[in-house]
Length: 261
Image 1 (cartoon, one colour):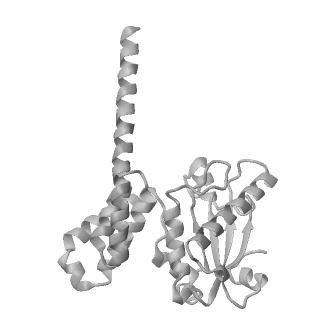
Image 2 (cartoon, helix red, strand yellow; image 1 turned 135 degrees about the vertical axis):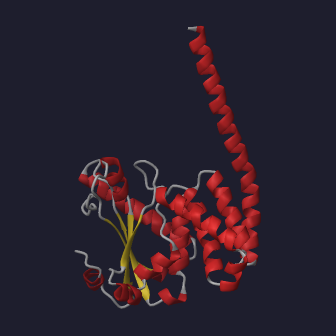
Image 3 (cartoon, rainbow, N blue to C red; image 1 turned 90 degrees about the horizontal axis):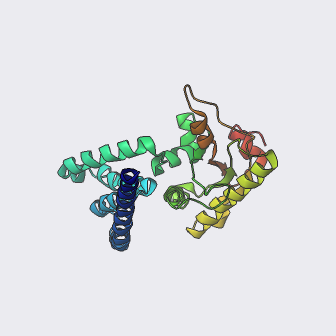
Protein backbone atom coordinates (compact mmCIF):
# COMPACT_ATOMS: atom_id res chain seq x y z
CA UNK A 1 0.00 0.00 0.00
CA UNK A 2 2.87 2.35 0.92
CA UNK A 3 4.48 1.67 -2.45
CA UNK A 4 1.25 2.60 -4.27
CA UNK A 5 1.00 5.83 -2.30
CA UNK A 6 4.64 6.64 -3.06
CA UNK A 7 4.13 6.01 -6.78
CA UNK A 8 0.99 8.14 -6.87
CA UNK A 9 2.76 10.91 -4.96
CA UNK A 10 5.68 10.79 -7.38
CA UNK A 11 3.29 10.98 -10.36
CA UNK A 12 1.53 13.96 -8.80
CA UNK A 13 4.86 15.74 -8.26
CA UNK A 14 5.97 15.04 -11.83
CA UNK A 15 2.68 16.25 -13.33
CA UNK A 16 2.62 19.34 -11.12
CA UNK A 17 6.24 20.12 -11.97
CA UNK A 18 5.58 19.68 -15.69
CA UNK A 19 2.52 21.94 -15.55
CA UNK A 20 4.43 24.54 -13.56
CA UNK A 21 7.28 24.45 -16.09
CA UNK A 22 4.80 24.81 -18.96
CA UNK A 23 3.10 27.74 -17.22
CA UNK A 24 6.45 29.37 -16.50
CA UNK A 25 7.56 28.87 -20.10
CA UNK A 26 4.33 30.39 -21.41
CA UNK A 27 4.55 33.20 -18.87
CA UNK A 28 7.99 34.11 -20.17
CA UNK A 29 6.73 33.61 -23.72
CA UNK A 30 4.04 36.24 -23.18
CA UNK A 31 6.79 38.78 -22.62
CA UNK A 32 8.45 37.78 -25.88
CA UNK A 33 5.13 37.75 -27.75
CA UNK A 34 4.65 41.50 -27.57
CA UNK A 35 8.21 42.09 -28.80
CA UNK A 36 7.70 39.81 -31.82
CA UNK A 37 4.32 41.36 -32.61
CA UNK A 38 5.83 44.83 -32.49
CA UNK A 39 8.69 43.73 -34.75
CA UNK A 40 6.17 42.38 -37.28
CA UNK A 41 4.09 45.54 -37.03
CA UNK A 42 7.15 47.69 -37.78
CA UNK A 43 8.31 45.42 -40.60
CA UNK A 44 5.58 43.25 -42.13
CA UNK A 45 8.25 41.32 -44.09
CA UNK A 46 9.97 40.13 -40.91
CA UNK A 47 9.52 36.42 -41.55
CA UNK A 48 11.99 35.43 -38.82
CA UNK A 49 9.85 37.08 -36.15
CA UNK A 50 6.80 35.32 -37.64
CA UNK A 51 8.52 31.94 -37.34
CA UNK A 52 9.76 32.70 -33.82
CA UNK A 53 6.27 33.71 -32.77
CA UNK A 54 4.88 30.53 -34.33
CA UNK A 55 7.39 28.45 -32.34
CA UNK A 56 6.41 30.29 -29.16
CA UNK A 57 2.72 29.54 -29.67
CA UNK A 58 3.42 25.91 -30.61
CA UNK A 59 5.37 25.38 -27.37
CA UNK A 60 2.54 26.88 -25.33
CA UNK A 61 -0.19 24.69 -26.82
CA UNK A 62 -1.78 27.23 -29.17
CA UNK A 63 -1.57 25.42 -32.53
CA UNK A 64 -3.93 27.73 -34.45
CA UNK A 65 -1.92 30.78 -33.45
CA UNK A 66 1.24 28.88 -34.43
CA UNK A 67 -0.20 28.00 -37.85
CA UNK A 68 -1.24 31.60 -38.42
CA UNK A 69 2.28 32.93 -37.91
CA UNK A 70 4.07 30.03 -39.61
CA UNK A 71 1.81 30.73 -42.58
CA UNK A 72 2.63 34.45 -42.52
CA UNK A 73 6.36 33.72 -42.55
CA UNK A 74 6.06 31.21 -45.38
CA UNK A 75 3.93 33.62 -47.44
CA UNK A 76 6.59 36.32 -47.11
CA UNK A 77 9.23 33.95 -48.46
CA UNK A 78 6.98 32.62 -51.23
CA UNK A 79 6.35 36.17 -52.44
CA UNK A 80 10.06 36.85 -53.02
CA UNK A 81 11.98 34.27 -55.07
CA UNK A 82 15.38 35.67 -54.11
CA UNK A 83 14.49 35.84 -50.43
CA UNK A 84 13.23 32.27 -50.50
CA UNK A 85 16.38 31.08 -52.32
CA UNK A 86 18.54 32.72 -49.66
CA UNK A 87 16.65 30.97 -46.85
CA UNK A 88 15.83 27.63 -48.47
CA UNK A 89 16.59 25.53 -45.37
CA UNK A 90 14.49 27.76 -43.14
CA UNK A 91 11.62 27.65 -45.62
CA UNK A 92 11.76 23.84 -45.82
CA UNK A 93 11.88 23.52 -42.03
CA UNK A 94 8.80 25.62 -41.41
CA UNK A 95 6.92 24.22 -44.37
CA UNK A 96 7.28 20.79 -42.74
CA UNK A 97 6.29 22.11 -39.32
CA UNK A 98 3.24 23.83 -40.77
CA UNK A 99 2.14 20.67 -42.61
CA UNK A 100 2.58 18.44 -39.54
CA UNK A 101 0.68 20.83 -37.28
CA UNK A 102 -2.10 21.36 -39.81
CA UNK A 103 -2.84 17.62 -39.98
CA UNK A 104 -4.07 17.71 -36.39
CA UNK A 105 -5.42 21.27 -36.30
CA UNK A 106 -7.61 22.44 -39.22
CA UNK A 107 -6.73 26.00 -40.24
CA UNK A 108 -8.03 28.08 -43.15
CA UNK A 109 -5.26 30.33 -44.39
CA UNK A 110 -5.86 33.68 -46.12
CA UNK A 111 -5.37 32.19 -49.59
CA UNK A 112 -8.04 29.55 -49.08
CA UNK A 113 -10.42 32.07 -47.52
CA UNK A 114 -9.99 34.52 -50.39
CA UNK A 115 -10.47 31.81 -53.01
CA UNK A 116 -13.82 30.82 -51.52
CA UNK A 117 -15.17 34.19 -50.40
CA UNK A 118 -14.19 36.23 -53.45
CA UNK A 119 -17.13 35.39 -55.69
CA UNK A 120 -15.23 35.87 -58.95
CA UNK A 121 -12.43 33.56 -57.86
CA UNK A 122 -14.89 31.02 -56.45
CA UNK A 123 -16.73 30.94 -59.80
CA UNK A 124 -13.46 30.29 -61.68
CA UNK A 125 -12.54 27.49 -59.26
CA UNK A 126 -16.03 25.98 -59.45
CA UNK A 127 -16.69 26.28 -55.71
CA UNK A 128 -19.56 27.93 -53.85
CA UNK A 129 -18.85 31.35 -52.32
CA UNK A 130 -18.82 30.02 -48.78
CA UNK A 131 -16.47 28.27 -46.42
CA UNK A 132 -16.68 26.36 -43.13
CA UNK A 133 -14.50 27.54 -40.26
CA UNK A 134 -14.10 25.28 -37.24
CA UNK A 135 -14.15 27.49 -34.15
CA UNK A 136 -13.83 25.97 -30.69
CA UNK A 137 -16.22 27.31 -28.08
CA UNK A 138 -16.39 26.78 -24.35
CA UNK A 139 -18.70 23.82 -23.64
CA UNK A 140 -22.37 24.76 -24.00
CA UNK A 141 -21.43 28.44 -24.25
CA UNK A 142 -20.86 31.10 -26.88
CA UNK A 143 -17.40 32.16 -25.69
CA UNK A 144 -14.72 31.62 -28.34
CA UNK A 145 -11.76 29.45 -27.39
CA UNK A 146 -8.62 31.62 -27.05
CA UNK A 147 -6.63 29.70 -29.66
CA UNK A 148 -9.51 29.82 -32.16
CA UNK A 149 -9.26 33.60 -32.16
CA UNK A 150 -6.21 33.19 -34.40
CA UNK A 151 -8.46 31.77 -37.14
CA UNK A 152 -10.84 34.69 -36.78
CA UNK A 153 -7.88 37.10 -36.94
CA UNK A 154 -7.09 35.60 -40.36
CA UNK A 155 -10.74 35.95 -41.41
CA UNK A 156 -10.65 39.60 -40.31
CA UNK A 157 -7.49 40.23 -42.37
CA UNK A 158 -9.24 38.88 -45.47
CA UNK A 159 -12.48 40.81 -44.86
CA UNK A 160 -10.52 44.08 -44.63
CA UNK A 161 -8.78 43.65 -47.99
CA UNK A 162 -9.71 46.02 -50.81
CA UNK A 163 -10.49 43.07 -53.10
CA UNK A 164 -13.29 42.03 -50.71
CA UNK A 165 -14.99 45.45 -50.57
CA UNK A 166 -17.68 44.55 -53.19
CA UNK A 167 -18.93 41.80 -50.88
CA UNK A 168 -20.87 41.42 -47.66
CA UNK A 169 -21.01 38.28 -45.58
CA UNK A 170 -23.51 36.04 -43.83
CA UNK A 171 -22.24 34.45 -40.63
CA UNK A 172 -23.99 31.18 -39.80
CA UNK A 173 -23.56 29.27 -36.55
CA UNK A 174 -23.97 25.48 -36.49
CA UNK A 175 -23.93 22.90 -33.69
CA UNK A 176 -23.54 19.18 -33.19
CA UNK A 177 -26.59 16.99 -32.51
CA UNK A 178 -26.09 16.80 -28.74
CA UNK A 179 -28.94 18.59 -26.95
CA UNK A 180 -32.46 19.57 -27.98
CA UNK A 181 -33.39 21.40 -31.18
CA UNK A 182 -34.45 24.65 -29.49
CA UNK A 183 -31.37 24.68 -27.27
CA UNK A 184 -29.01 24.12 -30.19
CA UNK A 185 -30.71 26.84 -32.23
CA UNK A 186 -30.16 29.37 -29.43
CA UNK A 187 -26.59 28.15 -28.96
CA UNK A 188 -25.79 28.48 -32.67
CA UNK A 189 -27.22 32.01 -32.76
CA UNK A 190 -25.16 33.03 -29.74
CA UNK A 191 -21.99 31.60 -31.24
CA UNK A 192 -22.53 33.34 -34.59
CA UNK A 193 -23.07 36.62 -32.71
CA UNK A 194 -19.85 36.05 -30.75
CA UNK A 195 -17.98 35.66 -34.03
CA UNK A 196 -19.53 38.86 -35.40
CA UNK A 197 -18.60 40.79 -32.24
CA UNK A 198 -15.03 39.52 -32.41
CA UNK A 199 -14.61 40.49 -36.07
CA UNK A 200 -16.04 43.97 -35.51
CA UNK A 201 -13.59 44.40 -32.62
CA UNK A 202 -10.83 43.60 -35.11
CA UNK A 203 -11.90 46.65 -37.16
CA UNK A 204 -13.83 44.72 -39.81
CA UNK A 205 -16.22 47.30 -41.38
CA UNK A 206 -19.74 46.97 -40.01
CA UNK A 207 -21.23 46.93 -43.52
CA UNK A 208 -19.20 43.81 -44.31
CA UNK A 209 -21.52 41.77 -42.08
CA UNK A 210 -24.81 41.28 -43.90
CA UNK A 211 -26.58 38.84 -41.61
CA UNK A 212 -25.89 36.78 -38.49
CA UNK A 213 -27.99 33.66 -37.97
CA UNK A 214 -28.06 30.32 -36.24
CA UNK A 215 -28.88 27.02 -37.92
CA UNK A 216 -28.66 24.79 -34.88
CA UNK A 217 -28.30 21.16 -35.93
CA UNK A 218 -30.44 21.51 -39.07
CA UNK A 219 -27.52 21.33 -41.53
CA UNK A 220 -25.19 18.64 -40.24
CA UNK A 221 -22.29 17.58 -42.43
CA UNK A 222 -22.16 14.23 -44.18
CA UNK A 223 -20.15 11.61 -42.33
CA UNK A 224 -16.82 10.64 -43.84
CA UNK A 225 -15.88 6.99 -44.33
CA UNK A 226 -14.64 5.52 -41.07
CA UNK A 227 -15.24 8.75 -39.16
CA UNK A 228 -15.89 8.36 -35.44
CA UNK A 229 -18.99 9.91 -33.91
CA UNK A 230 -16.81 12.23 -31.81
CA UNK A 231 -14.94 13.50 -34.89
CA UNK A 232 -18.19 14.01 -36.81
CA UNK A 233 -19.80 15.90 -33.94
CA UNK A 234 -16.71 18.07 -33.65
CA UNK A 235 -16.83 18.99 -37.35
CA UNK A 236 -20.43 20.09 -36.98
CA UNK A 237 -19.51 22.66 -34.32
CA UNK A 238 -18.62 25.25 -36.90
CA UNK A 239 -19.26 28.70 -38.31
CA UNK A 240 -19.97 29.16 -42.01
CA UNK A 241 -19.18 32.36 -43.91
CA UNK A 242 -21.15 33.05 -47.10
CA UNK A 243 -20.22 35.94 -49.39
CA UNK A 244 -22.81 38.04 -51.22
CA UNK A 245 -22.68 41.01 -53.55
CA UNK A 246 -23.38 44.26 -51.71
CA UNK A 247 -26.62 44.60 -53.70
CA UNK A 248 -27.89 41.05 -53.06
CA UNK A 249 -30.99 40.34 -51.04
CA UNK A 250 -30.78 37.45 -48.59
CA UNK A 251 -32.72 35.23 -51.01
CA UNK A 252 -30.35 36.01 -53.90
CA UNK A 253 -27.31 35.47 -51.74
CA UNK A 254 -28.47 32.12 -50.40
CA UNK A 255 -29.55 30.95 -53.82
CA UNK A 256 -26.15 31.80 -55.31
CA UNK A 257 -24.46 29.95 -52.48
CA UNK A 258 -26.62 26.88 -53.07
CA UNK A 259 -28.32 27.26 -49.68
CA UNK A 260 -31.94 27.00 -48.63
CA UNK A 261 -33.21 30.11 -46.87
